[in-house]
Length: 112
Length: 118
Image 1 (tube, rainbow over the protein chains, first blue to last red):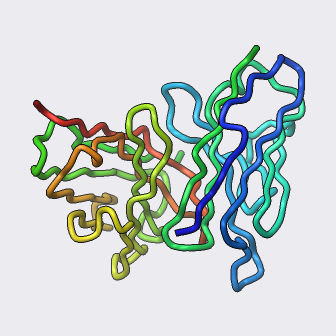
Image 2 (image 1 turned 90 degrees about the vertical axis):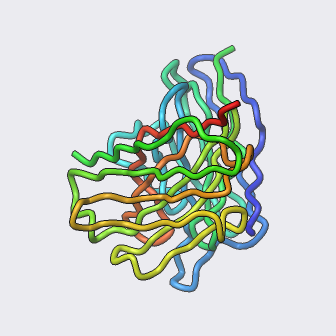
């Protein structure tokens, strides 16, 4: 199975400051169709996961533009440009290129 | 509005069985591949199973293959997960999710909790 490794696992941030989460895959996520199937999900406390980003950098409708995704191959990043209180939660990357789909361990974002 | 509502969770003894359901609304259920993902208490997300839109193709993660069966009833907009020979490692919140396109999951349900009875 493809292993997804996130860092850091815990990320205390000050309101208004930026935050970055790294996600690395054990194999290239470029599929035979040329697309890279790397998604980011946010899970707020007590809630279900919510998709933020699909195919590396495409933001879901309704997702604030302070969230952005980037990367290629095996190395990906989710950036929050100016953290707000509502951003508290756990963030997961997920690869959709290979079976089984696999998730990173999760990064817990909290306010300092 | 897309909605996925899971049910069927509850207390189960180790070695027992349980069937989970996920009722879909707000979209053409029969056009989408559907998935089950689980989350043990306080832990991360773990992929479980998938079924194609018509139900003719299924996928299982190794840890559940042979014990779990995914199925669907497109006439009732319902996804199922029949779970058997349950162990402590299967105790989790089970989510159903929709695949809008290959490699992607967009909408998730609220989850249903499977717990071990003493």
